[in-house]
Image (cartoon, rainbow over all chains, first blue to last red; front, side, top):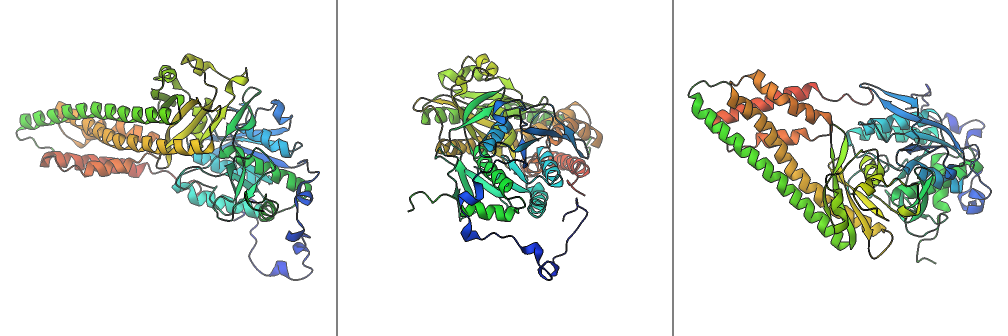
Length: 276
Length: 261
């Protein structure tokens, strides 16, 4: 349901008759390679939302590319989107932003803070953040966090579907633990786990979901709090590698749908380790 | 519900039960600590680490408190409280995502205040969440493997197994302990005076209020456990039934509103 846009498109035959202009994409999977997808891309003009602990605006790794910072404020009955001056409470959001900029240096970063002080109903804040990102028409969002709440499952599912139809590619860190986590398990998102090959341009496609992509996430040098840097390991550092690739891709090829983005990521993935 | 016949014998029995639940509560606390200590000892030994520790979440105020630690370098951390918005441990708690970091010392601006307070500043930290059902209840952290400057993905996975043990131990003793607290609060009131719906309500209010502070608390698990208490006499069972009734009424009025109407 695209309730935000006020427009609900029925699933009928209209798009397939007449001049069919809406169907012309000019993309042939067999013609896609890394050069076509990524060469010369800078992420210029592409907004990327980082749903995390905030962004440190003046951190050198972010190169002054933070264009907006908001936080979700939780009331008793509602969630409000408010401007955020808190910066990055942990350093983690900044780490993700820095990784994204290694692929797409001219990207426009949008900080959506859902972690930190006074955010008890984190699941609610997370949902409100996703809702906002979709409403804003932001084409890429990095989610290095997820919710385990079964009661929020249908809401996450609804939002992930809305994102897919609205053209927002959600790049989610896979959960390292037993049990479900949302929205990283949904087919409508790009889910990412870590591999240990120290190369940002090595990523794998896994034909056996739910985790569909593997990216560098072990001993990654990353930006951190207070202008600092550390070396970090975890799926939450693998997701922004893929989010950065997506930003570079959609910057070079505007208008790609999340479904096409995922197909292109799979088509350009590295050969499996041990394969010819 | 009130039974005014032979009050002295009944009150003596109830007072005895209250005393025993107090002892049980303390024993439970010790058993939990011993289990958690065993887990961090094993984790420190397995990873050949300088230290390992477990911090558990506490409410009012919202914070993480280090409960147990292993390793000579780890002892200073016991009892230290940190905000959930700070540091690696706070991040792992807030996101329930395991992470490991290293080269902490290479950056002079890294916030070492808490680490220095404990007398040990690590070079590398790995943290994994303690998950109880849907909720993160704490963090297991391991500091500085002697054999390697960093932690691997396999290390994080293995730590996850330790964290599951810890969470299971905590959950088992907590359900028992909180059940005990509910009973105890009710029994104290009864021992002090008459049993009416109002006194039960008053005795339960603070306990229930605390449970409600976290909407994901498995409150009904506790109620079920209370319901399963078979060893009590008829009068006490009536009391338990009263407790459940009041709790149920309270719970039914505080069901969370759905996210989107």
